[in-house]
Image (cartoon, rainbow, N blue to C red; front, top):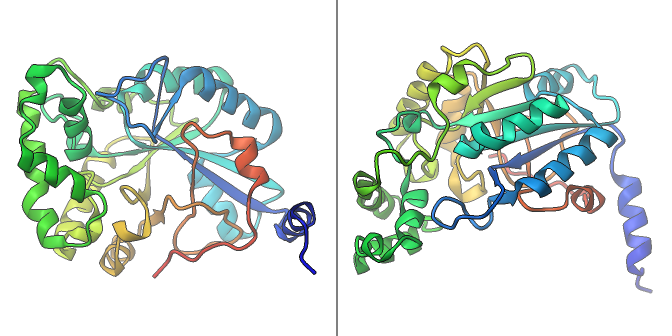
Amino acid sequence: MKLNNSIKKKIRKLLIPDNKLLVFNLHQSTPAFDPQRHGKYIWSSIEFFESQIRYLKNNFELIRLDKAIHKLRDGKLKGTQVSITFDDGDISVQEYIIPLLEKYRIPATFFINTSYLSSDSKGYWFNIYNYFKFGNEKQQRYLTDDIKEIAKKLRNIDNPVFYRENYKKIESLGKYIEKNTNFYVTANFLANLNSHLFSIGLHGHEHQRFSMMTKEWQKNDLNRNIEILSKFKSFIPIFAIPFGKPLDWNSNTLEVCKELRLEVAFANGGYNIKNNFGLLRIPVDGINISQKIADLSPFIKKYYI
């Protein structure tokens, strides 16, 4: 006899522990979507974002991620506690997101790629390609057939040699982007963050798929990331792996993190109930968080190696 869906949901809900940490993962939020600057799956309208943080504020205890990790470590989680994190350091964090978080007194952690803090650096292959792909006719001319083919493969290809030989071909187009076009927050902005409310974590010096890089590259990149971010008073030694899915990191990544004594955060869904090596985070850009919480499953996938 098959169980109907309502009974399944009730059973699933009963199996989910009362004491848990939910870590939500976001990226960009602005009043309007601009395909040149925003990713389809990593953006939400600022109006929708505000509705989501109001919901969280009214229903859960919100806690900064580093403090949440201490509670996990000490076994002191009580009820469902929530941490909010943002990857990449998109300029919308500076322009729209921080003002809202300050308005509602909501703590958050921002994972930053330090290579892009300078206005001279326009970012990595994903955002640079989109800038030209959705630009005007003159901008689109920079996208040769070769560049288009490379862009199709970089996100999911399981070929380190191809990745390392080609990602810079797209990033080299950054020099054709207008100098006053800024995609990311500035170092000065990070230096003046409210350190009681906000923290800054690592996202790699460059935003690359670490699984495609040598162990030496990964260690050098993270050391540079640490060197720059550790100067800010809001810095915490937590590394959110760029992209964050299982194909985007490998055993070398975790070994380097252990050597450098870094906590690790993925972006794969699931909740946290104890101090594992690696935090599970739930991507919620443009997604109704209350529904996401209602759909939590007790069967947490293991993403650690």
